[in-house]
Image (cartoon, rainbow, N blue to C red; front, top):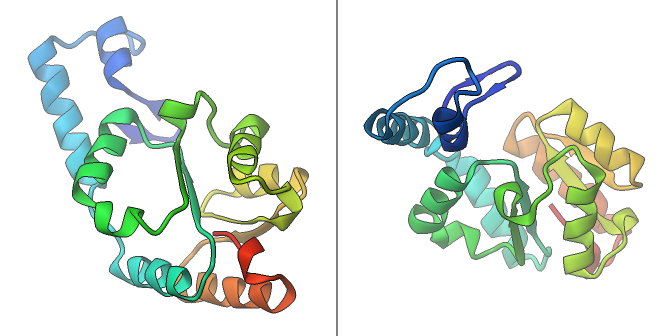
Length: 166
């Protein structure tokens, strides 16, 4: 995603195929991708601490993200220390399905060997939350790490730890 505006997702493929009515040469495309990756590359340290605490408490974690391949590669290279806490890391650019498509959620459930009803799905986007709810997942709309920690705690009191997911 090079440019992120409502309804606009510009990938390297789009740069090369004039999907926006203009084209960029390879040098400009490379520069735009680098600028986009840099703009999305920072992480919330409070959320990283929450992930670490949840993993240490025995919560099984999975990540489903719609980030483009260029950013996925950047995260794997620069953020492996916290990505390692996830039992499953599913980037839509690699699994062939993107949120809010039901197939994206079901792909993850299949790989984890769990039914949707045993999943706590956390996301900041309402459309993704609604899609997960339609599949029977428990959901929490992310606004800040403290609220997410509370949602995990509520789930843990009602589920065995091995079934709790982020």
